[in-house]
Image (cartoon, one colour):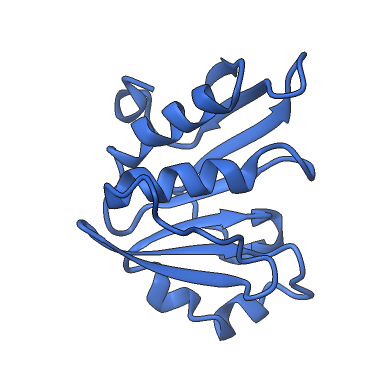
Length: 148
């Protein structure tokens, strides 16, 4: 596990950008944390960096549940499973097909048995200041996390 203290939104976005450079098709990034922990901001920064487009519109998929993005390295899907009732519902959202690309999942506890075992989990928690966060990254081999 790697732990990073992120003093502000810029630091959170910088960590997401460094992670974006490591992603490849088949990767899953699971974003955990309470409401307001910065999961959506992290996902937005990650997708913008992966796309190489700082102004890319990345709306929260809270109501649509999933958004797809064409990236230079393939397609990525951003899931927000907060409103999901059962884990099986994620299959109706195209989960199996999405796993061929990159998936970013907010509220991954809703995945149940569908949770990828080889996923990177990014657990975000509020820090000492209003904009500060603590990020704990786990699930990937330490060598793959170098530079984060």
